[in-house]
Length: 381
Image (cartoon, helix red, strand yellow):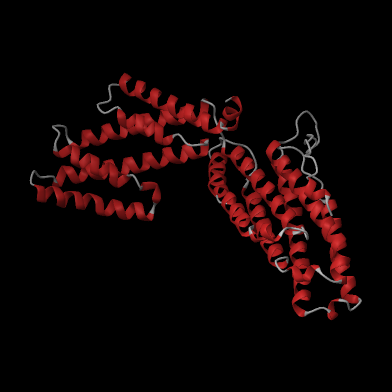
């Protein structure tokens, strides 16, 4: 039970914040005698997101939508509301049409049609004026936003920057798994047939990073975070994923693994595999712990050795004696590994940027990173 609690810590923290926000919003609404306190509670719950940046966006969207919808709904209700069903339907259409168009153009106003409808229909059955109802609704939403943001900032706060690094570390580990499998000449055929599912898993792991990066950038713009912009890191990981797709296409046919040329390339390819996997494992650890970026030189040296071997085979005329398809695979893999090395070099720079600034005169990147043990698959070859 304790282990499960540790593994689900982010979910537990979010659940605790949501609970605190809901209870605090209810207490605040009752304290100021709001007529419909549940709107403040609902708003506080909706504002609570997994990160401060996400909570800030939810609060701004809800406030903008509520303000626009309440103002337009009160205006329409004050000039066009009648008791007959026909007039009510026409008034509702007049209220909804422009706000629906506005919400379609600007998603920040997506709650405006809902708020206008509430104000309009409540005005039809209430003795209060539409303006008073609109002001009550805005005040309820403001209370909920204030409580929600306060809880997000001060109760077990979670910043989007940490989410980006954690997710990026997981993506990097998946890249290591993929590279290890793609460059394994002895990979069982049934496992090779399932590589498409691994590619889909890697792509699915990359997609949440876009939202997390947007929230982290919002925190930086509002001075809620002073870390570096993580967008370049995500772009680099996306390119690494594309490189692995090219490597997969170049190694899909086992015909290129036979013959004298394949035997000459077997050692350099195994070294690229070993060094690339180790670098990605260490880079994932560095991102997860915000520690020192791993050394990229072994990967670059292994890639140069592979490319030099290909050039030597070409100069000796060995590649001309091979079938055109096999030669094409060798050149494609050479290009893919060259691109992968360039992007891993960029990943090294991005991981170094993610390290916290030095303190007390310590040189940048001096934080020790616990290096994971070399995987058994990487020690083969």
